[in-house]
Length: 335
Image (tube, rainbow, N blue to C red; front, side):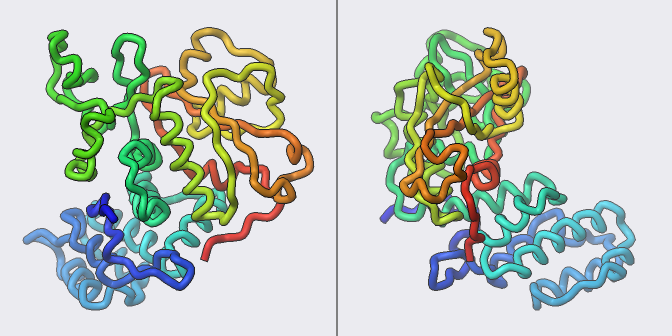
């Protein structure tokens, strides 16, 4: 079985009898070892003591007054965030349960970095045993913002952090002969180079072709199916579509904020203008293996998932919407 996404910290966690991830001291120490939390030479005594004692006992209680006593304002803020994240993980039996509690609370007060890292490691658990590089690359959308990479008729996505910078358009190695000026070169994931994903999985430097009819949408559908199954214990079938034709839009889930706005517009107005429709990247139809789980209003009809990009060509998927937006009668938290 091939390993992947080593950097997410999956191997620093324990697992319970149900396969859920259980927080361990080594996982927490990896956060305390981050440069943002390691006290600099001129740090105050309170900050130094807090860091030293938490590294020795990562689960020890920390009073708000102790953090407030840290002299440096930036350090105080960093410690408040990381301790809030730690306490969230310690309050729940598993990381999966912690994530569900957070997204169901309706109030996510952690920086996106922490939320994305939590999704990253939970998704690593959900995809354990997966040996399809296309599914793994598609799953990167769950925790890595993407940017549209313009190229002819293809609908390509590249990692925003990798291809961002001075030039918004990277050179794709398969089209570099066109002479596009850029500072970053990425490959389009294909059958020919897919095996190299296992050497580059933590680099996030493959572009994904999300054009309708290619492997990209089907791979994203598979990743979403496994995510739902792992966290909710619900089996669904997810089918990529090229368009919504003669469909009853009884229920839909926007996979990002832009897609939610587009879905709302389609729901209320019944149609989209060409400019708005052009921002729809992918459509999916979802059916439940057990119709009895579905709310009565949609029990006999499929519902739809929408993925879109912003006007400035960014894609910020919100995987929590797949968990909180499904038309399920009773949602049980993962344990």
